Length: 242
Image (tube, rainbow, N blue to C red; front, side, top):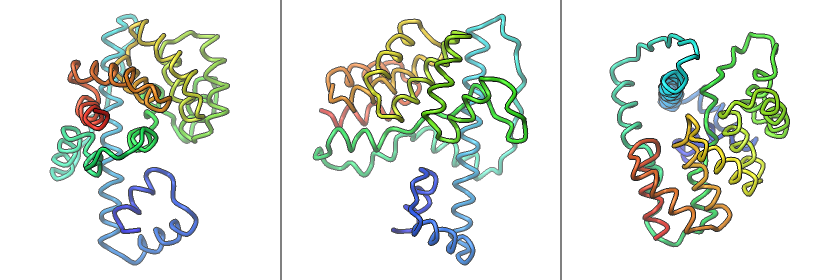
C-alpha cells in the first residue's frame, strides 16, 4: 500500500493491524509522511467545522424560535484555506478512479458512502454523558451503531426531532439495513426536514445498494438540479450509472 492510500485508509478507519504498524512507523520516521498526514487531518477538521457551521445556520433559519449560537471563526493558514476551497469545489473527485463503466453497484456504493458527520450535537470529550442525546451521538461518533440506533429510537420517541430520524437512517445504513433506512429517509424528505438535501444523497445511495438503479438516478438528478450539497458527486455517479 502506497503512502497516500495508507493515509486515506487511516481516515476511513479501516487499517488492519499490520497497516497500523506501518502507519505508526512512517509517522515516526518519515518527515514528509508526517507532514502530509498532518495536512490531511487539519484539512478534514476545517471542512467538518465548515459543514457544521453551514448546518447550524440552516437550522437557525428554519427555526426562528431556536436560540442562535455563535460559531467561532477558525483562522487557517493561507495554504490550508486554498486547499479547503479546492476540496469544497471539487468534492466528489474520488470518482476519478472510475475510468470505465465496469464497476458494480456495490463498488459504486462503497466508493461513495461515508457516514454523515455529527454536526448538530457536538460532543465535548471531557463532558459527562448527562443526557440521552449526548449518549446517542457519542455512540454514533464512536461507530457503536447498534447502541446508537437503540438510543436514536428512544430519543425519537421522546423528542420527535426530525434530524434524529435522519441520523437514525444513516445508522441503519451502517448496519446494512437499507430498506429501513429508505423508509426513514423518504419520510424525512417528505416532511421537508432541514437536512433534506443530505437525505436525498443518502436515499440515492440506499437505493443503489438495494439495486434500485432507476430510483437512485431519480434522487441523484434531484441533487444535480438543486446544485448544492453533493451536486458534483451526484453528476459523476449518474455518469457511471448510465
